[in-house]
Length: 177
Image (tube, rainbow, N blue to C red):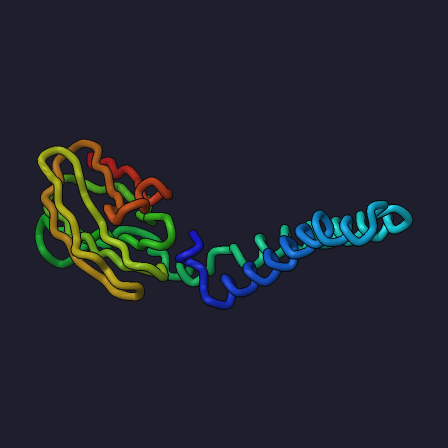
């Protein structure tokens, strides 16, 4: 997930996380050496600072760890039929770490799958099912690839075969009637 974040988001998380870690180390190693009764009379301020840094860290994770909405704006709404007889088109969008397949009835026959990488890291698409095991080449962020497959009735698995991506959630099913 960290690889999918922008540099600004990584920097924000690192700064807040660094401040939290620095406070923890100083309050557990440095200050008790200087004052054996630490936090003693300053217990209220110690607890308040701890709570403030804890809330700051949670807020940073929610704000900086949020997936951008750009990928959702480009999500296709439905499968579109193309001009050729028996040939249909299926638009698939990939982001970190999801595969967006429009919810539409897909019949058997030759299907032209248009794959768009709306993410920030390279992806690919593997289609595996009855008699089919095909994949696109690696798709750079913001680029597209096409894959033509002859689908028969049954269930197909669509996933990204880049190491770790399938396990991170880039795996979905497609049922052909």
